[in-house]
Amino acid sequence: MGLDRIERMGPDLLQVIAPNPSAFTAEGTNTWIIGTSEACVIDPGPVDDRHLGAVMEALAGRKVGAILVTHAHLDHSGMAPVLSERTGAPLLAFGDATAGVRSGPGPLGQGMGVDWGFRPDRCVGDGEVVEGDGWRLRAWHTPGHMGNHLCFDDGERLWTGDHAMGFATSVVSPPEGDMGDYVASLERLIALGPRSLWPGHGAPVSEGPARLQALLDHRHARDTAVLAALSPRPRTAEEMLDAIYTGLPVGLRGAARRNLLAHLVHLVRRGLAVPEGDLSEGVAFRCVGPSNSPLDAGNHHCYSPPRGPA
Image 1 (cartoon, rainbow, N blue to C red):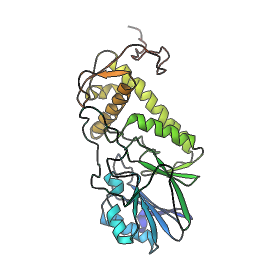
Image 2: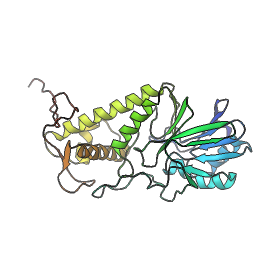
Image 3: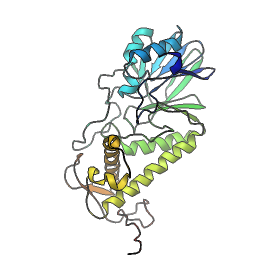
Image 4: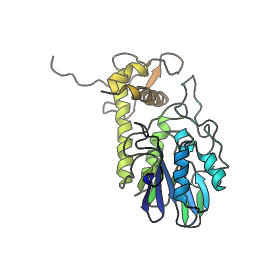
């Protein structure tokens, strides 16, 4: 571990990949080091002595002006306190793991991999500029994947954490994750204009707006598919899995079920579906009647797929 996990991505940018590969993290969590003299670190990554050693090797003794955390998931924030102690740099984030989380009725279970002990030294607000010697970033609050999620923008490059990645879509797991917020945050980032994306996992994406639009289109399509699955009868998120996801590996079923629950909660808030009881992880949902919703061409909540020949 060391130089084999460190890659120079530009004159002022280093990528250090943590040794935590998985279907959710690609090759591992990306720790980004910005700056040529004073450094800024984005997402220290998981608690791992090998990764800590690689990050310190990449810093090469430079002063660290700030450690920025996109969100409080353990694979991004876990090593933040240790790196802060090693470098003397303050931890900056939107807030702890509960910051920005919507309150909602009923038990929705618990998010995946949440760093409940995370505490920033200073909270960074939406639109706030954070800068040091040779670097300047604007923070955008982008809740959705998690309520306290931030993206960091230098006008050309956008560090997107888990909000937007090139290799996969994001998991949105209630209550820390919220699908309505996720969609709104995608729309907001698209409105920023041309940016390359530098995600928390996987390779950078040169055509940022196109990728953001593809992620947005995917979520709209998923809403329609969820409503189609509810049309025959009320179903739980678990019962809908095989109707929505085909060929899903066993190890991804839990995350897919949480995504479906997030879509269902989003549809309930918009008046397109209702739970058959208190809103919870295991409740069944059903479609409701016609309205002025633009979700489908017929302005009906419940979608009936065309029938083929008998």
